[in-house]
Length: 112
Length: 112
Image (tube, rainbow over all chains, first blue to last red; front, side):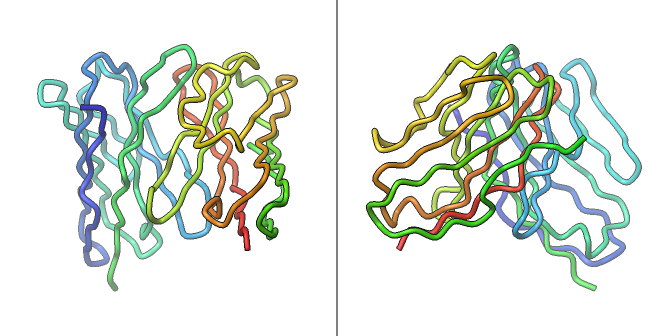
């Protein structure tokens, strides 16, 4: 189908790791992205991964890509209360124009 | 780098009035996107431009919505006449090919 799928909610304790999962649809997507949206703000580009990579690490963030299963995950190590937000995964649908297809977003709640 | 600039940040208007939202993309970006976000429908792509040319306007909900991009540094989204169901946060984003979209802070529109 056309949809990028994410679970809607995730709750973790401060200091634990968070793993947010996403399944995408187009095996030819060259880039996949993670965005973060804090309350009242726009979407902030967190990280992206090129489709020929399996993993990308950036400080506390680790992105894993399983192309066979079209599965993307974002792991946040040592989750902090400031990480509470909605996280969107997205796949690129038009390499020239940059059109993205977004998932519905996962609301991460971090409890102290 | 100022990022994507949107104005106004908040707009309250009465049903039937014309509303114009404005966006200045990041300098050098060749694509511009207009989104609408609501609790009920999530994030919806309304229209996007590549090199100032509209590429896909299939997300524009009705003829009351129109968008223009007269040059590489400016775009408008107009709603005429506005209705209460148009109340939402409208985001503008820009990108440079596959390197991810960068979002503005959004315009919160309330139509009474």
